[in-house]
Amino acid sequence: GDSVTQTEGLVTLTKGLPVMLNCTYQTTYSPFLFWYVQHLNEAPKLLLKSSTDNKRTEHQGFYATLHKSSSSFHLQKSSVQLSDSALYFCALRDMGYKLTFGTGTSLLVDP
Amino acid sequence: EAAVTQSPRSKVAVTGGKVTLSCHQTNNHDYMYWYRQDTGHGLRLIHYSYVADSTEKGDIPDGYKASRPSQENFSLILELASLSQTAVYFCASRLRGANTEVFFGKGTRLTVV
Image (cartoon, rainbow over all chains, first blue to last red; front, side, top):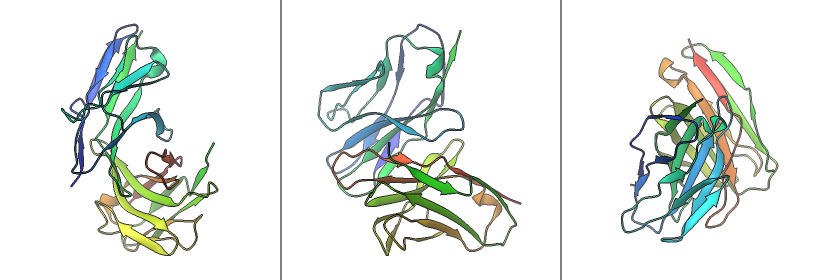
C-alpha cells in the first residue's frame, strides 16, 4: 500500500536559519503530495501541494519540489521564524480517496 | 473558509462503554474522513466515506464503526471503548477532484479510563 516517510521526529533550529524537512513516499499510482502544518492545539492546515514533477511550489515562505524520480517532496524555508514552530505532516493522495500521512516532524525554533 | 465541526471537543469515557463522535460539514464536500492522532504515529486513517450511506475502512478500522447518514454528517462509533483508543480524533472533508484540499475539524480529545 501507499506510505509516507518522514525521517526526523524533531528538528530544533535558531531563528533565521534555513530548514529542510524530509519527505519520501511510495505509491503505485500517480502521486499528489501535500504538506500540512499543525500549530499547538489546532487543526492541521494545508501549507503546500503538488502533483507536477520537478516544479517548485511556494506558500508563506515555504517551498517544495516534487521529484518523482526520487519519490521525494522535501519542505524547505530559507529563514525560519519563531511562528514556524509547529508539527509538519507530509501526505500522499493516490488516485482514489485516501490521504496517507507521515508520522510528522516537530519544528522548534529558538530565539 | 470551509467549516468542519466536531462534537464533543473532549470526552472522558469508561472502558467498555459506547462512544459516538460526531462531525458536521457545511461545505457540500463529497469525501469525509476520520483520523486519529497519537504521538509518534502521526495521523492514521480509521474510516472514510465518499458518498452518503456508504463508508469504507481505512488503515486502522478495528474497534471502530462509521456512519454517514447524510452528505453533511459523519459519525465515528466506538461500541466498546478501550484504553488503547485514548487519542485525539480528527474529522476532515474535501471536494471531489484530483488535487483538492482536505479541511480538518478542530479535533476531539478522547480519554478512556
